[in-house]
Image 1: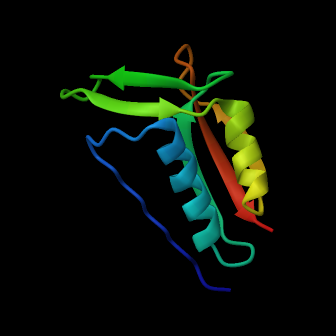
Image 2: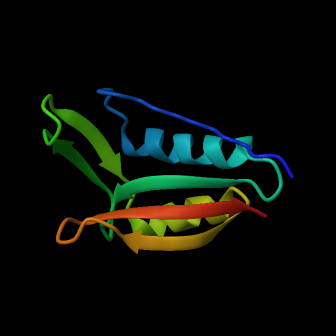
Length: 100
């Protein structure tokens, strides 16, 4: 079994909520059967636009919210294998998903 690496980076580009969902669907669609990817996002209950300057320049991004993120992953034919709040007390999560 080979390793499949898909890397998407959008530095300093504002991606709206529909854009975030589109990127997530695209990543799921690019995976081969049983392929795995890691996704990070704000650990919120619903959609929200965010701005963060933790690394210097302001970065704008959107959050689908955990329920919509999980639904998008499932609708795109992937299975959530792990979801964890990884930066407590910050509301940030990472998700590991696998193509069915």
